Amino acid sequence: METKAKKLLSPANMTKIAVLSAVAFILGLEGIFRWRLPIFPAFLALDVSDIPALIGAITLGPVAGVWIVGLGNILNVVITGTTSMGIGPFANFVVGSAYILPTVYVYNRMGGGLKGFSVGAAVGVVFAAAIASLMNVTVMIPAFAYVMGIPIETIIGMGTAINSNIDSLVTLVLFSIAPFNLLKFALVSVGGFVIIKAFEPVLAMITKKS
Image 1 (cartoon, rainbow, N blue to C red):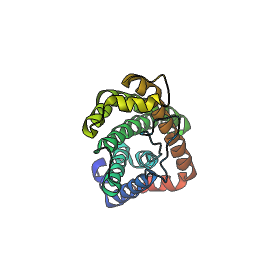
Image 2 (tube, rainbow, N blue to C red):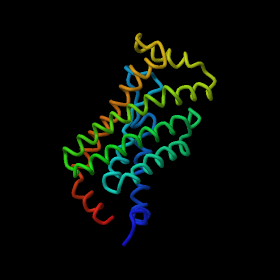
Image 3 (cartoon, rainbow, N blue to C red):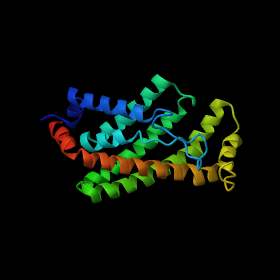
Image 4 (tube, helix red, strand yellow):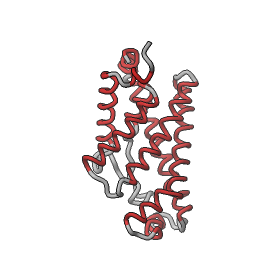
């Protein structure tokens, strides 16, 4: 009997992961499927590049979903480069994985379906926003400020320009980064569900063959 690892590493599944990773990369391209909203600081760009990872995690398993998140970000760094010394893509990987894993875990535990997806997505959205908030306060923003040689106050000031209540790193996270991630992963959840339902027969066939 094939182990789950062997099934995941089969040529067919690796091809699916590669295709979904390429789609994730395309959905994360600046100026195409990635945009900025005036209610958030300019360094926060909204995209739905985690939808392919969500689809991969549901059809191929959570490990495949994490691989797709990672490969999509690697493609982004290799092909388009990075202006954050890799900190942004790394943060995207961690936070994207923090959304995918609990979402699919709860979805599977509840036997799938709309209820399972809704509860799983709600848990994933909140968990991802919490991880993003914690990481930005403790690691990401301080690391970005250090490697780029700019004061943290400058980054906070970008938030203050949008919302006068932002006057510290904690309030920047509370009023900008946390709401941003809640919105982002809510959109990923809705978009992912619509695509999964629209192509349910095809995805069911892919899952069965896997």
